[in-house]
Length: 231
Image (cartoon, rainbow, N blue to C red; front, top):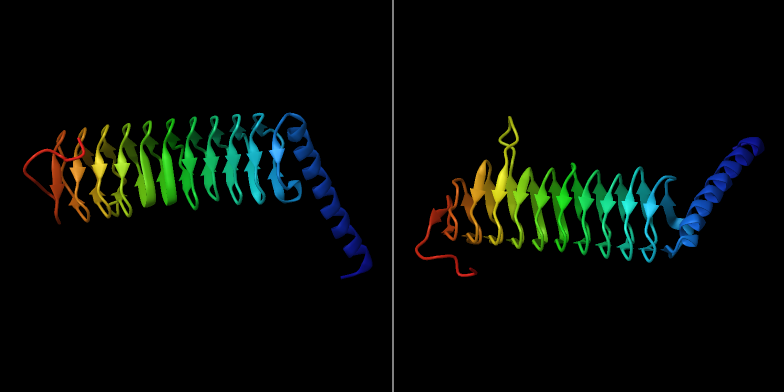
């Protein structure tokens, strides 16, 4: 590298760092705690509420709006995201989507496709949500895919559960109503509806609608006697 080229490169790097630190300082002055400004990337135009903590290696892009008293990062990317108050986004990506108050996301989650997480939702390790709405207090704590779905309030989605939304030609919708229990490793083959308070057994492949309070299990899933135990 010639001396002149090296000088231009160093100058560009210095200018970028200066701008980045200036943007971080602007948010710090407004009550945001940025743990390591040198590894935090905040694009101009982003809004961040007072009391929010931005952990290292976090990128905030576009028209992102973050409320108060949140923990964002470390190692998170928010792009055109809307975040309420008192949320945790840990080592995860949220793009073009909204999460309301008291939501926990991460680690290693991806929320995208104009998805919406209502207050109190919890996504644990390696959950992906795409083009879906999840109701208040619902949770998916381990290894799941929720795509093209409408999930009600207080739904438990077990480890390894998948909404099978694509048949190779078109995408289809899954509806999971309030209080349903989706057992670990359940495959919900859309289009399908799981009724209020219904339950699927572990490893079920659900190809038909499940009525309110019903429980199903098997491959393919069949209705079992009695009501779902969790109701």
